Image (tube, rainbow, N blue to C red; front, side, top):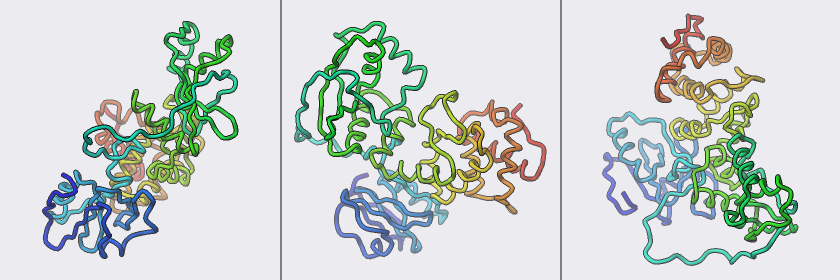
Length: 372
């Protein structure tokens, strides 16, 4: 589906594709704030605000606005026809599963114009180089330690490509790409200088964007590396997730390693992003706050599954649901072991349903049924 594809909607339902043209009056009435320089803007939806990107489709049904990328419109249309709208809205609609990635447009013929200025090739002493932890991936893990040790032990100039660095106005050289090679050189201690391609960037946020581009072009990043780089780059989705996590009293871990994780740290940023798209920030905030209260000062076991179970509870609360009884119930389930409840279950949805049942039973002080 593209911007010019005819969209078949039920009678009385308005739709508009954001192609840079003027906003219809029925869209303007629910716009929140000013339009961003990149052409995006926020609209009010039944589950909170949603950011409308170029190419997104805005649909009005029974006075409510919904935002979808073009590929998602048929699913929403089916719900509208059945008059059973899901409470779903898009956070950063039109993006891929990774943060900070814009939807891909059709390939253009020929070459694009060259972007940026050529680098300065220079040799820099290892001690004059550094990394910016706001967007650089963590090397405090076993895989990175093994890689650094291997490079240091068998150093070969023929395998050492130039580091990509940012030449900041204060004279510092900040590594964008090549952190492991630099760490290996520092570990050896006998390399007096390293080859660098030095570029000038306007801000650290620009550096973060280049870090994302350089790493995605070569290999996949884990979700936490991606999240923190997107956060440093000012990505709207990452900023919203970080706000909700922080306001709940939790924090996003810098490492996927369970050993390196601290109490109150979570890693399930992808689950949070999905929940935001489907249920909005109020449901997500309630789930995160409940986890923070239940597991204060302790490690969060099976965090993603527990979070998804809480999302199910808050999205469709059972009769007589008492949020104040949730934290004690979570602690009671935890004493029985979340892992035992879901150990033989496959798929995140199946695990979430099983934990929801266990949590509801704990709220009623019923026996908790573990997996056979």
